[in-house]
Image 1: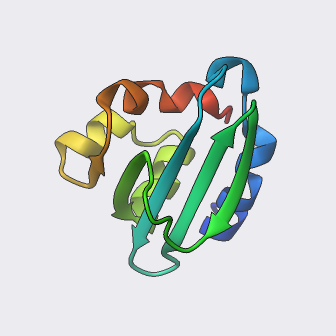
Image 2 (image 1 turned 90 degrees about the vertical axis):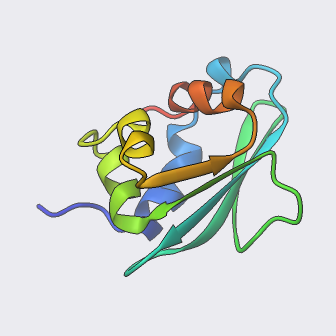
Length: 108
């Protein structure tokens, strides 16, 4: 069985969302995924819910840029965000405090 598509991963995010980990967080997390199967999506986390939209948000709290392949590797547990960042496969813009909590908001 192959990997899920970006579309499947993104659409599944609200189902994997952990409201207890997010607590009272109010944030918009933008994903800019390049390469084959890439796209632009943003997750809005507010009032212990996660909703997904496609496109670019005008003022996201946090923006991640990476290839679609890197994102799939991270979701599948083959690559950590930290490793991807140090290998320059992932860049982000926004508060580091939110970056380090991100993995807790979504279960695998």
